[in-house]
Length: 279
Length: 348
Image (tube, rainbow over all chains, first blue to last red; front, side, top):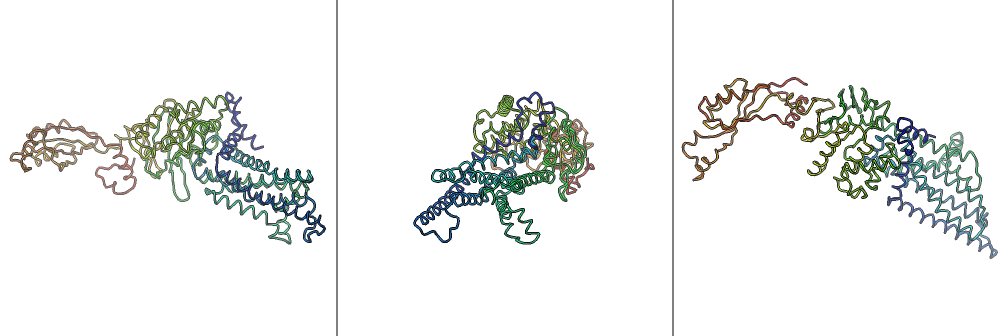
């Protein structure tokens, strides 16, 4: 919504001559930023790390499952594995829980430079003094990072694909897991962008977003009882993402991630505004 | 085109810009001259909408920089200090991006980029990555970024800093060329830049404008005295006395080093290096004469010299350079040692 409102302005004011081909301002930022992701070695380092670790997780989960199956077939089921022989519940669910956790590391690595680096190198001054609005900058950068996240999801499709080749997991649960993971990435990206707006240091931004997101993951365990516990449960990323891995899409979980993303984007915009007033 | 009224910007306890007012008509190049930390960058950042003023108003092309920031930014090109660029982009990509932010798309975008590339002489570097370019080219690319889309107003913060002398000359002539159709404000702490590029100059120190006008006006307004240099042959005591007796002459100072007249003196002293007899009479010295402001004493001076039987070999007037004025103005507003100068006027 804000995207349209912001981008519509240049067309209204006598720029009609250029209007026919006037680009959406946020889209310009988005394209530039996405180009940066492709050209930046940092992206490839982060993605390589992510795929090595997630691949390792996946093979461990599969190996464990295969072993459990073999044991069951031989007539001596493992004492620890209660629901284990269901490929959806073990492999798919565990895989997505692992991916969910890895996003906690990957997303801050992808978002840390978004604003911090521009502020350090001075190009931020160019952006802010161009006719771009704060929301153009923010949304352009947000969606560029989100597209990288979605691309990662696309490559991650290999894992369930392998499951489908050798077994029959429930497609609906896989899709629900995917939706959950997408929402998590969207929320984390908004938080990472907000953290990047706070600091000139990329490292500080990365640490801040990792630590902040970790708190949102663990907040449910930190406060277990009483009113505080109830609030903590409502804010817990872990609790809201758990249902998706079980194949349950609840409206309040979806709403949580949407509100989370919008809230931190909004906070990011506030910070950009405040920077203008203080800088 | 650019109008600033009573602009004040305070950071915490520091007053960066202190009740500054000025006006730049269309087609002028205003040079902000001042030492580092004088408030030049802050004033420019207010004009570009990067930071809002604490009080006062500023407008660019009739658009207030606070209430109509976007409209103002749309007709304005800005080169920030240190010329930041995106190192991972090509020059063309970089310019294209900023053309887009100014509302150019498709064919118009391409044309705008081509024009900026041509105007800034970037043809050779157009497809190269900015990160791999030399400082001079990067500076040009940043300048091209300000120029792309042909904004009516250019604000350039230290456009020549960190360049080698040839690049400095290139950038200056570029700026002069650009000013044909635009209104320009540039800041610098390099003095010749102002007299070379600007039609108007504002000397800014500690957030205040201490002098402004055309470079020539500022120069003559601020000169408190004229300096004359006379080359006189004859006994020094006599010459000094003759000079000092002329009306309006404030001070006479003989240059310590003797300048022997060509030919004769050179022949006489080449023996043992001792001063030959009779040389005392033909001794030639340079005298620096300080004269009260706005009095031309050259005629009476030469008469006085000749009448006392001395030879006047040369008489020339030296205006104070902009550099002298700059240092002088700044030390005076300092409340420091500059105040003690004889005949010093009160603040501007």
